[in-house]
Length: 375
Image 1: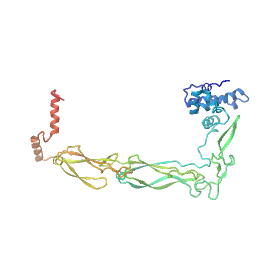
Image 2: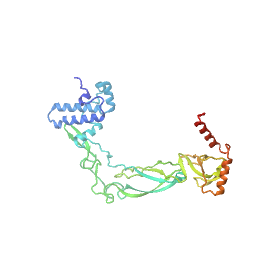
Image 3: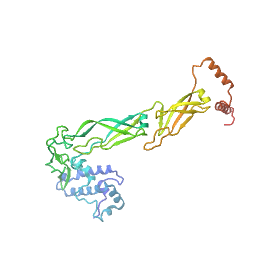
């Protein structure tokens, strides 16, 4: 007698998603479960058929093999799809729905120890700190291992005892019709132990909340969004479990004078019209606190950038540095005296294409454009 198509058994299309398969199986399994149909051999056979179909189609690799080769994919080795009364982890969530959590898998370790949670700390630093590096002292409220009981949760001098319900295994078996299901022990919640005399400091949790002071080394060259991981400095574990990690996320404050782009720095420096025209020297502060003389060429235009190689930010985990770009901004004079205005008018009258080539060229091109001349 040939087997029925697994998709047909579950009443779904071959394009059915994992959620579709789960929903179809849950509905039919509850309908044909032997406990709801005592003495009904037909329902029992149907239930076995449903489980066989779901075990194959809920497993990605087995489903791919079935889609390609059909039932022949499982006949040579005895079949991964035959129902044998032992349900794998892929079935756990289904039986949790059917039997109120009896098929659920506990995420606790078998000895009841639990790893502490990872913690996040947001730290804002100045651009100077990112340039030079620094050691920052942090005070973080977190859960740490209880010292009086060393994290066991039991009163000092006492010990936890094996759970009488599960015999220290943390799991118990329950019969459901013709098969049995293993579930988390309801007495000890999967720990396998019962604390009869809990520690007065932590009340049996094995950890307490306190403020902890840490020193964090911030290396030169860190960027906005850099993450620093401190292993084992997170929340303490339950009942002696390992601690989580602490992640420090850095953000860098805006600077008054410098703007950062990767490892390069930019600084806008205003200069007088006279310095721009005749040239001169500027004294510009560096990020390292020193002052450096920068030569301004004669005839410098507003917006010109002067590059200082190697004067930018340090590159993280490297001896290299970025560059510093001085962007010149020519300042227009204000509140001129009558004599100054007279001199400027005289200069404007005597100026030529040689002294102001950019503006002269621009207006000549504009005239040609409106006259219909060459573009």
